[in-house]
Image (cartoon, rainbow, N blue to C red; front, side, top):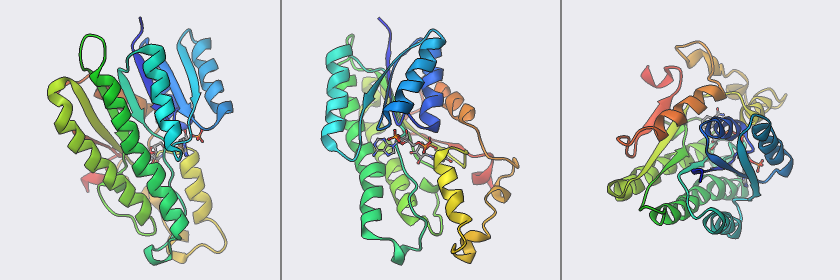
Length: 256
Ligand SMILES: NC(=O)c1ccc[n+]([C@@H]2O[C@H](COP(=O)([O-])OP(=O)(O)OC[C@H]3O[C@@H](n4cnc5c(N)ncnc54)[C@H](OP(=O)(O)O)[C@@H]3O)[C@@H](O)[C@H]2O)c1
């Protein structure tokens, strides 16, 4: 029987790259997200390469969806070996006092509560894995989970929370063989970044945002790629000495 990998946000940029990497490593991959079209496309692309995957719809703003997704995995597969929490949003850029309450709620619901609940559900399955507790959980934080970002305080707040939940849970379950870590990437062009760029180039954009030169801060002189992400995830799941780590994957941004 194959090992089981779950990717929440498997329909997005990072998630799809991880899905392909894990399928190539012979995992049965469960791709979760809202978009059935992108989910099924990912499953079919994996199948075309000889891999095994399935799509399960899950809107992480609905707590019942999160419970149902994990219950399905537990009942169908009876195990979970790798779980990647990638479903996230960056939201509207605004100064803190101008952030709308609804935007704040949505950000914290997706980027904090859903990550936390999903991790709880994942640990519960991993504790009951046949042969004893085992598994790897990877949470996507961001370089902005380690520093602030002007006009992005809800996002930065949420990603700092991901660091806190990762480190705390990691300390609780490492002895049992469940390894929980986070990856903190810098900018990697995906749909999320396209959304930010369209905000920067709006005619009514705040001059601070309109003049932002995002790439200038990267010593390597370029943004990352989703392939860089998949390689980092492969490294983390191959390692049982990384416990509560936050792997900075940022082209040197955090080094200076
Ligand atoms: N790209 C970057 O530069 C960057 C840098 C650092 C950290 N990150 C973090 O890495 C993660 C992945 O980012 P990405 O670049 O791959 O973003 P992306 O391409 O925009 O994908 C976002 C994913 O989140 C899912 N999602 C959003 N809202 C959801 C909801 N309510 N329920 C279920 N799924 C939902 C989307 O799926 P559906 O649309 O199918 O629901 C999609 O799969 C995020 O947590 C992000 O904050 C990204």
